[in-house]
Image (tube, rainbow, N blue to C red; front, side):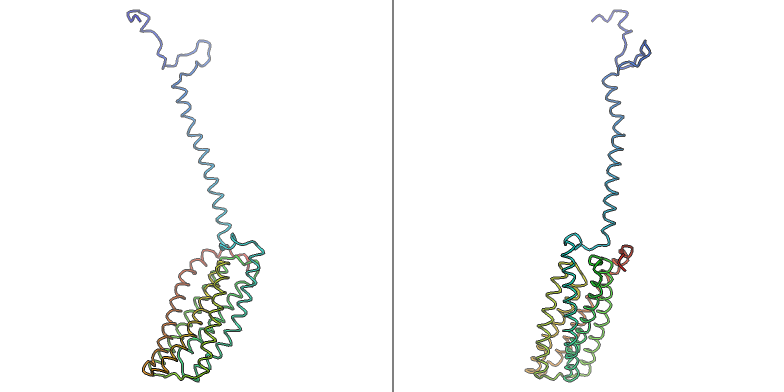
Amino acid sequence: MDTSDPNFSNAPDPTIVQPSRNGQAPPLHQDQCLQRGSSETPFQMDRDQQMKISESAQFSDLVENTAGLLESSTKLKPHEAQSYRKKALWISWTSIIVTLVLAVAAFTVSVMRHSASSFGFAFDAVLDVLSSAIVLWRYSNAAAVHSAHREYLACVILGVIFLISALCIVGKAIHDLATKLLPEVDDFLYSVSVLSGILCSILAAVKFMLGKVLTSRALITDGFNSLVGGVMGFSILLSAEVYKHNASVWYLDGSVGILIGFTIFAYGVKLLMDMVPRVRQTRHYEMFE
């Protein structure tokens, strides 16, 4: 190409928009089309962001609607949940009757045979009666079978009862150790111990199973209390047998009472620390009272 041509320097630059002679906009250059296409991208991004925000809001609404429910609400069908609720009521009534009888027997043994662990078991049996009564309240309303607030509130009440019971058990055991109170062993003590250990262990197993299915911390706590009762029943037998063969180990009975009391106290503290904040978080979702 001859660059000496005088018209060469006047050739239009393809990157510069030239006005149209007929008043219409000239065709856009390829680079300009790309630039315009890129200018529309933010609008497309805005629409995508709006869709994401809308989806996030829907998810938040879903979480808010299920915040007051237990995990069992998504695992169980309505008829299954009601069936397990009735089973929880039955096992609670059975536990109240059985442990009430055992509590009376254990208190009798404690007074007659000066047994600190028997007194501890009797107190734990009373606690089991109260905890089963709380579970009855927990599942008395069919509509509240999945209520998280009702569940957590029941656990808080259980935690308070655990603390009171633990203090009484430890106080009695320390008193018996300080006064060097010696236990008396006979067939009545053996019978109460074995019967208490077996029955409370069975009740604990059933409560743990139902608590797992219903995702109920209250039922599991009630099962833990029954398990402690079973351990205490067998511990009475153990300490009595050891004392029978070696009277120098008279302190074993009181020591077991203290150990069990501290175990119940620690569980009660843990329960309150876990449940009190949850009661506050779910109080706005309670619709069954």
